[in-house]
Image (cartoon, rainbow, N blue to C red; front, side):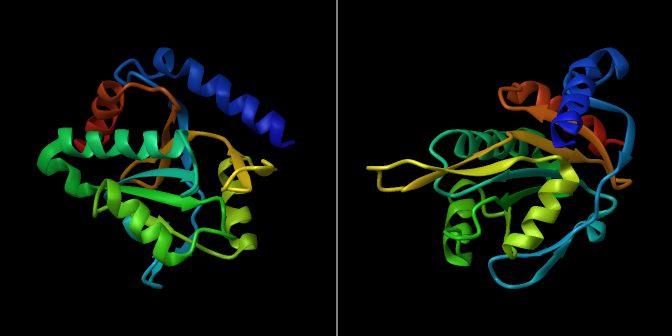
Length: 192
């Protein structure tokens, strides 16, 4: 079932530019309500997605020991915020851990702040995080890597899920989407 959901999402993302001519990448047509969730910030405060209606939220899933995709994605989203200037005050970049065993509140706080102090890191129990991943069609699986300091990696899907001001899942950026395209598309949502 998860494989079918990922296939359908991939088809929608690939068809996005044709369906929404003004967007450059990964538009979902028709938009669907973004699954709501409640998780915790490293400070222990509650973050509920529904409380951010009226703003744009860019969700990404990953982990702080990630050697490549996660730091690249967060660095690119930080550049998107910089390019958007004052409009970025209505853009919330949210990093949801896929590694509740190692990603402590202190580690997530330090990791996200290394990119941008406005990034929001979110934590939860393994069960809470699994429910959120399932709602968004995100895969995450631990892979043991003997002989390394990390001991294991977490293989995970690498989309940025963009939720519009109405609370709808509107865009999905696959890993490798250009900063220009992400900035353009998020900028369009911020102007609506």
